[in-house]
Amino acid sequence: KAGVTQTPRYLIKTRGQQVTLSCSPISGHRSVSWYQQTPGQGLQFLFEYFSETQRNKGNFPGRFSGRQFSNSRSEMNVSTLELGDSALYLCASSLQGFEGYTFGSGTRLTVV
Amino acid sequence: DQQVKQNSPSLSVQEGRISILNCDYTNSMFDYFLWYKKYPAEGPTFLISISSIKDKNEDGRFTVFLNKSAKHLSLHIVPSQPGDSAVYFCAASGNNNDMRFGAGTRLTVKP
Image (cartoon, rainbow over all chains, first blue to last red; front, top):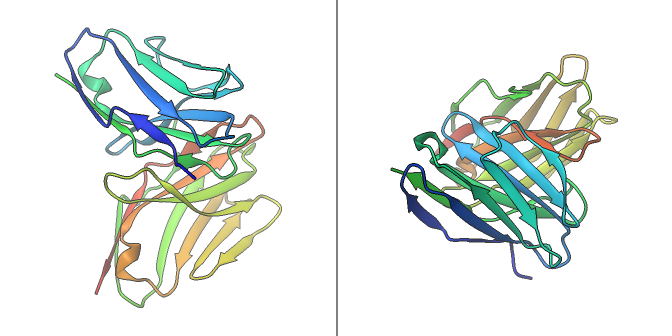
């Protein structure tokens, strides 16, 4: 079966711009979570969506937002980009919750 | 708030020896713990998990130990192989369905 697909793989944006990242979960998976990975900080939890509803949210500013569509695909949006937003953004999907998370390969965002 | 901590950023062991990766957590509501392995340019992949009702779970060369009173878990890899070289993330979750990860430990297994 197809894995978790994240697009694009790489992205370069300028400070102040906004960006939208996409995640297509494994077919049948209804839970999608987003994480930010930076060196030394590990994986920081952004938010989790289940059946189009945000079920959990991490400690990130309101510039970070997301949504989930009826087909479980999810998008993450970051507005007014800052240099510190440069990171690898990972999406993970699972059937219901945290069991058996499957991660995508991530989107590498560079803010210049 | 780092609720899950991996205090060793890196670990180097000889092939065939034991690798021990450590993880501490602060939230007593966590009741499910996982280890993920990550290779460069790939997303993390699930390795092994343990529920808080157990203190040990074994899967082949990988064993996870949980010490609830100390809020500590460890991953043992025996014997270590060069292909085990990767970044290992410890993760924990409670009943709110979100998962918190540690900063990761880079394991290098030397031939």
